[in-house]
Length: 397
Ligand SMILES: Cc1ncc(COP(=O)(O)O)c(C=O)c1O
Image 1 (tube, rainbow, N blue to C red):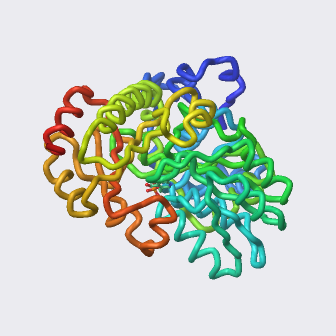
Image 2 (image 1 turned 180 degrees about the horizontal axis):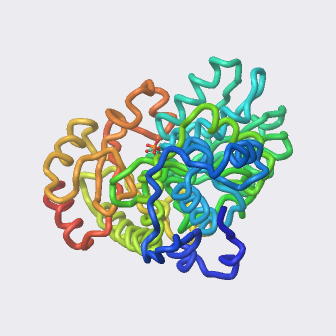
């Protein structure tokens, strides 16, 4: 309900702090928090008009809430998207973005390397309703071309992927997908709105787990679906969200609105720290391989630099010698970096994907997603990088 037009000429850092602000008559500095599930009307006629849409009035917080609108407007302005719908979590966003659009008999082509729950939705849940799923190696354009040589209704990908940090060419895949008639949905959780804007690269829809870098301080869950396609958002996604109910709590929307204010500062620092850590890890004997798109030896380094504003991202993955046992030993010795499966936090967090985030995949599916028994994923925080490197050094010793 707020007017994003005035933010058009603002630069991203200004939008992150000020877009979507709707001050109440009290003139508060910080954004107001409307913890209300319902709304009152001056008359029965006004209630009726609010439901028919003749009057612009909130009706119920499953449909919309001023704090939710503020978050949606700010994120849309920061992302450069015309429309944004907030959701209860990142998975609610991914599921709604796909389930609202796909029908029985439709076909979805997705990258193989996905976050475990995204993979589960596409491989196991959507097929329950007769939606056919096909997975391809996301980095292989020939594989996309082959899979998209027959019509498809949706394409889904993450870049960088979780946890193998595979980089997918959004421009090229969007082009192939559009020729096949597919809606392109990009999960931008790892790249963040600071580094990568998939809609500018040809994607139709962007989803976020706002739980990650948008909050950035591990407090709340949230998600969002963004697009420039009004028909898709207003006639497909919005009714689906209203009737099925994965709405964000106003409190969480408020936390995430405040999170957006500092996202660029945090993500920039996290990227600098991540590069320094990736370079350090590359010199360590205990490590077989370091995967970081910011390193020149990453197979898609140049594409990553082009697509992600010259940064490699906030996550570093590495394979340790000695498999699961060695990985656990190193993780258990860390004194600063916490063992946690969350990511994008101000605190550095480390996880063993094979036994946590991607545990539900079979060993073969894990391998296809780039996960080995010795793979570790490190979400780099904003601490002093010298302390982080010293912590890793003593754990690897
Ligand atoms: C790439 C990606 N997409 C989606 C999600 C799901 O987000 P949420 O936990 O907010 O539902 C995650 C969570 O780790 C993720 O890494």
